[in-house]
Every structure is written in C-alpha cells, then in structure tokens.
Length: 291
View 1 (cartoon, helix red, strand yellow):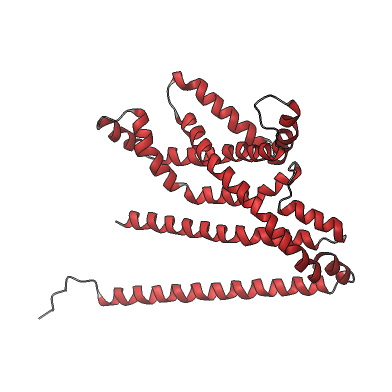
View 2 (cartoon, helix red, strand yellow):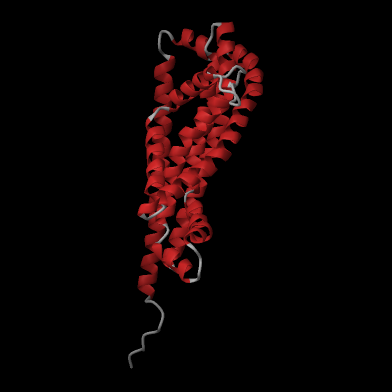
C-alpha cells in the first residue's frame, strides 16, 4: 500500500531551503570579506603613495605636528562647548518651527492658500540661499540696524540664521512624513468626531514624526557641523575660531586638523545612531509586511 502524504512540507523541499539559506549566508560572508580586504588594500596603497611623496615631511610638519596638536587640543575642546550649546539651542527651535511650516503646507482648501504660499516661499528661499550667506547677512546686518528692542549680538543672529536655514530643510522632511500617512487615518479620525485640527494633532503628526526620525537625525548631524559657521560673525571664539587663533600663533595647520577630529568625535556617533534607527525602521516595516 502507498503511504499517505503527511500534512507537513516535503522533506526534500525543507532541506533545499536550509541549504539555500546556508549558501546565502556563506556568500554574504564571502562578500563582506572581499569588501574588507579590498578596502584595506586601497587604504594601504593611498598611504604608501602619499608618504612616498617628496614633500611628505613638510606636509606632515604643517598638518600633523604632534606637539602642536597636544598643545592646542585642550583649548579647542573647551571652546567646543559653545558649539554644543549653539547646536542644542538651534535644534529645539528648528524642530518646532519646521513642524509649524510643514503643517502650514499641508493645510487644504482655498481659504488656506495664503498660508500655504507663505510656507512654500519660505522653504524655497531659505533652501536656495547658502547657510553661510544667511549667517553673514543676519550677523552683520541686524546689529547694524540698531533697532530698539532687537538684540545686537552677532552670535544671536548667527544662531537665528542656522534656525531659519535648517527649518526650511526639516520642514520638507516633516511634510514627507505627513503625506506618508494614509488618508484613511484622517477619515477614521473624522468619523469618530475629531476636528481637522485634532486629527492632525492626535493622529497624523505622531505617526509622521516617528517615520521621519532617521532623516531628521541626518539633518541634525549637518547642523552640528554647521555651528562652526557661527565663527564668521561671533565675538566669542568657538572651536573653529580657536583653531584659527592657534593656527595664526603657530603658523601651522595642525590646530585646524584638531578641530576636525573634535567634530568627528560628535558626528560619527550621531551618524551610527542614525544608521541604527534606519535599520530598526526597516525591520519594523518588514515585520509588518509579513504579518
């Protein structure tokens, strides 16, 4: 008599899937190993090519002087605290102002056309003007007006310039998140008796913010770097200005390299955290699609 087939999957197909998965893992590990070896080889070749240059000793003395680096680093670290303060202040206002702009652009209906137009003009203008020019114009222009009741600190207006520029970029990130929320979510909220404003506040915005956290982190990495632009107009030295002072005192570019390394100590962890958030969001989407 012929045996009845069982309800489970065939043994052969199970084994083939296992072998296929193990083969993919081995292929992936092989690809990673090849990539690491090739990258290391390229780095070694570049280092050998640069260090064999006839002017390498002079270049090393001008940019990688160990003693000057150690002497200038404590002062640069001390002044870097101002960059962190500038970043924290600007980040708070950028998050709030950019969300307001995104909501203004998301309003529907002819009655809201002037508000939408204002938000569109703002984002177009401040995304089109380089941030350094905004800081330059505000940092030197606003104090020169001497308007009563208006701050005359160039540093204050430099931070305002950062806020205005980055709010335009972050507003577009927010708007993308708002538009990614399915219209059925709003329809369901309205059917429960929520007004349009309440639907935006309690349903759309919370979902949109969660979805755009990774790209927001990318913008904030750039914002941390651009706090160095405050040195253009600020009276009090921050990290980059302190590096310029040390460079002028030593006639050596090593302090500028030290400033770059200090910024890397902040931006690289933020970048890796952004990658983690992106990967976590991707896994959530994959898990949701398989349910």
